Length: 337
Ligand code: MEV
Image 1 (cartoon, rainbow, N blue to C red):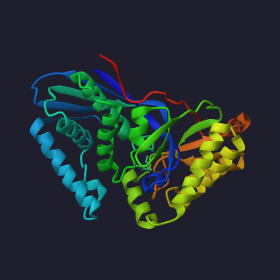
Image 2 (cartoon, rainbow, N blue to C red):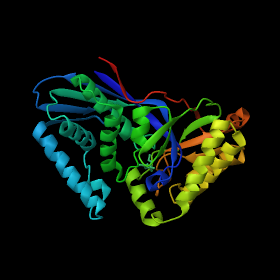
Image 3 (tube, rainbow, N blue to C red):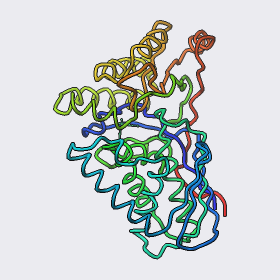
C-alpha cells in the first residue's frame, strides 16, 4: 500500500493562527510518500526513513510505552519544565508516537509491517514536512489494514503528533496536508477556498533554518502572548483573502508587504531574509516568509513571492530561483494497493 500527502505553504497568518487569528494556507504539489508492506511478526514493525538513511524496529509494547513517555514529556514541556526538543528525541520518535496513538484508537490493528517514508518536501523548511509524512504514513497503515479512518480522524491523529513535534500546533499544517487545496483555518476549523489564479505566485527557498518551528513558537509566545499584534495579523489575512478572491493585484502586493513587516516585528525574519525581500519589493514585487521562519541564524525556510508583472519576476530570476506555485487540490490519500 502506498499513500501520499502534499506539502503546504502558508499564505498568511503563521504564528497568529496559534493565538486565534485566521490563516490562509495552500497545499502545494510536493509530496511525502509512504509505502507499507506486510512482513514478519504481527507484533513488530520496521520503520525506514529513506531520506535520513535511518532504520529502526519496535514491538507493540515498546510502541505503547514510548507513546505514554512522550505524552509525559509533553506535559513537562507545557508546564515549562522541559524544552520541546526533549519530547520527541529520535528521528523515529514522531512516527512511533503517531502509530502509538493509532493503536490506542484501534487496539486490534495488526502490526507486522515495514513502513518506508520518503519525501520530496525539504525537512524543517516551513513546508509542513512533518505533517505530510505523518498524515501519509497513517493513511497508508489504515488503508493497508482496511480501517475506515475518516479525514477528520486522520487530521486529529496527525495534529496530535504535530503538537509534540512543534510544541503548540494550531493544526494548520496537518489540516492542509489532510484536505489539500486552499484553506481558511481558525480555531481548529477550516473552510475550503478556491485559488484559481496562480499567475504571479512563486516559492523561494531561503535555506533551512537553524532553529525548529517549536523553538520559534516558544520565543514568539514568550514575547507576544498577550500582544494586540494578532489583531493586525487577522486584519491583513482578511484583506489578503478578499484581494485574492477579487483578483486585486495591488491589494495583494500591499497586504503581503504589511504581513512581512508584522512577521519581522515578531522576530521570525532574519536580517538576511529581510534584505532578500527588500530586493523583491524594490523591483515592484512582494514577498513574505511562509511558515515558522527563524528566530536565529540567516535562513528562514520557505518565502512566498508575488510578482504579477512577469518582467519583474524575470528581472529577479538571475539572482533568485523562483519556482511557480502549483496548488495540490487533494490532501492525504492512499494511491495504490
Ligand atoms: C508552522 O508551519 C505554522 C505556525 O503558525 C505554527 C502552527 O500554526 O502550528 C508557526
